[in-house]
Length: 365
Image (tube, one colour):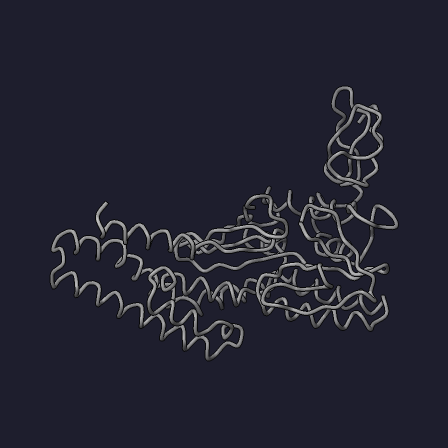
């Protein structure tokens, strides 16, 4: 491998690194394609890490990260999930000591959840701080107001379009830098070697990156959320092709509107989409039959009420339908209302959902 080839490989590896985003496990990444359609995908976890996973940005389209609420106020404490599919944890209200550190929301020593960005974490920190001094009725009303905002489809689509327009020039410039870095410069080096045309091509590449850094600086001056680590990203955009190419993606990540994945799926996939219906049913089942320390099940907390209100117009998510036994498989006598697994033995609880009592299957189901 020649020195030039090695440089290209290193730059490509760095671009891949810049294209990966660490997002909460409860999040979806939605990216706009060249046709204007938005497509969602879930993060993939590494080494069984709880609380988050990697999601890749493909192409140069704008993207938003949508994630469910990180915590919910319950009568017996602040409820939060360290992992989306794991059991809920409850902190007594007198133990809650909340503060935000970057995108991490610290609820108490040793307990934290990840938000989609630092602005979201700060907003939730203020909200939870207010909950610690309120009555349960006030907490639930405050949570419902927040949930309604996160499930607002119109607000999400408008914010996503604004973000698309805001990052458009950065993404276009990033595309030019991408082509110049991995096509023009390698071809010039292959054709002319270490001579003037190659130096001109490299010089133009740095000019493009400096231009990108200047545009990014202008965006940062107008948006408070972009000022964190501003110097690092401006200098990176001016000197590193990978960072410069993904400058628009970084802006999208930091200014992503706070929304629930259900709102995004409904907005961009439609209410008849199989993926939306499957996720809606799963969200409602897991909210009504949660794992962890709950006084009763099915649970009817404020998060369940928010989901019911949002999904009221969708017949397939009616609680009566979701809680009805599925068709019995041969030899099965019980089923789990959370994960729908059926059992033929005399077990009392679901093996995959600790604490969830199995329900009987009617012979004719």
